[in-house]
Image 1 (cartoon, rainbow, N blue to C red):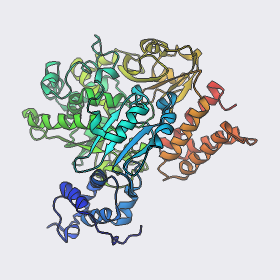
Image 2: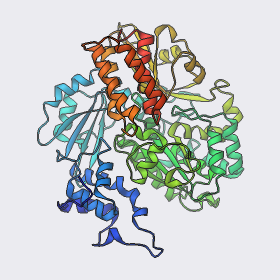
Image 3: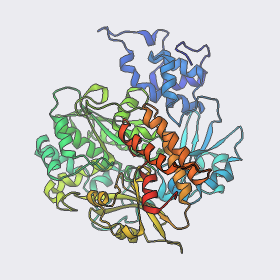
Image 4: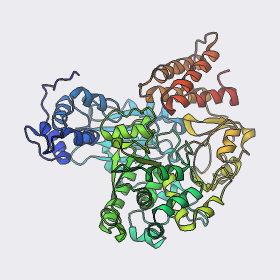
Length: 600
């Protein structure tokens, strides 16, 4: 598509979809200027991704006519709108059936036959339905998983856990409405109801849609205390707690909060990174589904402490139940004056918008989130400037993921020193781990830092069958393997580093001797090839070359020097890629070679 507006006209349904988001259009709407002479498009560009969702939800794809109408209304060049729409995997730019069943074939699902399930059912696709492969859907404790999406006036999505050929064919025939009886939250939290839990204490115990249930179990007491002690003291407590980011980077939260609070520029923004797309990760989804008010309260405390007026939850597009629960929590909090103007009569204003992603792993990177929200391709930015100085809309921005934020509640209630006393000196507090693969009881587990991997696997019920442990993938596709003789390693940042691994986002994928390691590594290589945003050459080319070499090493024909070439490609990506995707794209493959003797 070029920069000219396409000749194709939008359908009535597409116009209605845009009207519902943007309001009824006028002929010159996209070209108006406000009284100050500032181009109106500058304020409208951030509506681009929601508008693309509106079109895709209504008819199942984004037509040229719909894209042209959207471009006119937002005053965005069609080529730019096309560039954004084509960036995301959940959008189609070609006519497709209004019903799609996404079948996960990523790591946890691959271990239990997700690829075979896809092969068995894909042939059922016809003109009325698509059955297609999907990367990780964040439902690894229910592998194999699927997601059914129905476009239309009342678009609807439903997740399918423990998917079978029967349930997928049922989804293809009846759609999302046939799966309203979703898996109980407690099924994803084997520890549900146990004493001593902090972050998971409400999950599977209280009604996630009820603010009264939430308050009866201590909800909003942390916000009340935060207001009482003041913003500066809140930051002091977070700093004293030694809390570090739980998304993988492990940056000190108190230092980040203090940096945002010290910035004079206004407005300031708070972004909750809920785009956990790392294969094997599902903890944030479970928390958002089971304790959404905790996410809203912790964001409000962070905003109060740092002076942020507007918050965004950047949510994975594949999380329909989390989205419903968060939207309910936001609406209820507003009605109770716990969001909006003059919260708790404390004189501060803060509100939250859920911003729905559209299927891009790279949008888990904080600056890629900014571009996505602003209506551009979700490509990472070069740093500096850092987000605390110039982030979303070039303003000071605080970015934390879901798990990091909900840790703030026990910190404020119990004090930073008490929080720091749990765990180890270098890894304070408790940690959520996503245990999946060859274990009897997969799910989200909360353990204090310092517990061993072996202890965690015992909690998860050990192995359900006769196969022996082959290895454990820590940190997901961007992580590394540990051997069976290393499972006594302490689950701390320093312990993982000493074993040549990383805790990352908390993935613990257990692989037994019956698993096809070669197929698993091919999937990891294909994942990074697909998910590279293509912005920088080392990653764009390196992930393709890496997949080609892994394919030759596992299926053939091998070439002399392939292993050395694979290591060289990985090193170039580490050294020269712009962001963490390219820098870690070779990690799991290299560790499988070094730790498990794979590809030899």
